[in-house]
Image 1: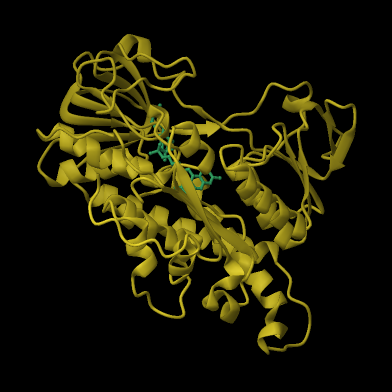
Image 2: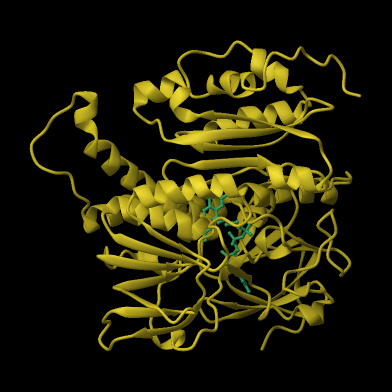
Length: 471
Ligand SMILES: Cc1cc2nc3c(=O)[nH]c(=O)nc-3n(C[C@H](O)[C@H](O)[C@H](O)COP(=O)(O)OP(=O)(O)OC[C@H]3O[C@@H](n4cnc5c(N)ncnc54)[C@H](O)[C@@H]3O)c2cc1C
């Protein structure tokens, strides 16, 4: 059992995700006494089993695709390019391992008390920690931050528990590159893996229950992504609900039965049907921390929970499920813990879906803007119209921006195409600066770059002069 008297600290961080580790390091440097408890992933989900390994492998897939079309660029060589499983693992593990090692050094060199173990609340602001070397500790924070993240949610389908299916975590072990991969779930994660494995040469079948993949996106944009995936050889099945899973013995083929009675069989099945909050084992009832109906920690727009001096951040707090949102949560917490008054209200959270080429998004979709009552104009261009895209031979994709016709402000954008994730930051700056779209249209942008495409995008709305002031 735990010691009877807990160690007292200024800040206790439960779960070392992006927000938690950043806050722990920052406050320890500022002279606070800080304890951070992490169960197993030094540096959190992003660097171990999410953004960093997946984007390392996406880059391998893109390299393969680029080499395959080298002849178009006048580069010739003998033999066909191919992926090597060992090489992929080495690449991924060197990036991930380097970042994990750097984090471990940072944490152990920092004045904070970095505890590898599993925490559970046993009283308000107090956790019992079972350390990974078998000891038990009791720690109480003057302030406590819960940053325990999410894990892959596997639906309760008949047969699934006995079918040894892959999740976004286990697929990254890279046990094999299957000849056929079934993917259940056409959201961001499912689409990223579909594009990556299709470029590796796997025959992918992507199964999505709603009538479009990427259900949160405008249907035209989701349709373009579906066309791109189809062009890469992915069999995209929308409006298809899985009813059961069955795997042959000795890790034989796996079969997914659909609600129309049809069945599809592949070598492996990746389940990418969303993420579940890590809250059930935390003893949050004892801590006085309320959950939402979906099991996330309930927070207000200052990231305060229902318990005094207990805060939550990142995925577990229902923040948009992106590392940069969690990092922004850190800034909000730091502000609120140091006497400022900072909130999540109205923040712009862009994101990039790393299919190839990528889809970058910010603000409202066209459908959301219309639903919110805006009068809108929609700017669009084909990526093939951008001079830089021609030089790169990266002409696939489409860009779209939604503009309020009364105020000329940009309400949102979807940049589907090469380097869309880089260019979206320029759109974001215009939105943060409350610039009329004409400022972007008329800006002198460097040539030939993908960013220059923003001139062309907003030119598609005509030559309406600047609105000098915001109404
Ligand atoms: C396949 C995939 C790809 C992704 N790609 C991107 C991307 O390209 N860009 C992007 O922005 N986002 C991406 N995301 C989302 C991103 O990874 C998450 O939004 C982000 O990691 C969430 O961080 P967090 O701060 O909520 O906590 P996390 O990083 O999830 O950290 C939570 C930590 O808490 C620990 N923990 C849990 N319970 C306990 C306990 N009881 N005691 C001690 N420790 C505990 C866990 O071990 C974990 O390390 C991706 C996600 C996935 C799954």
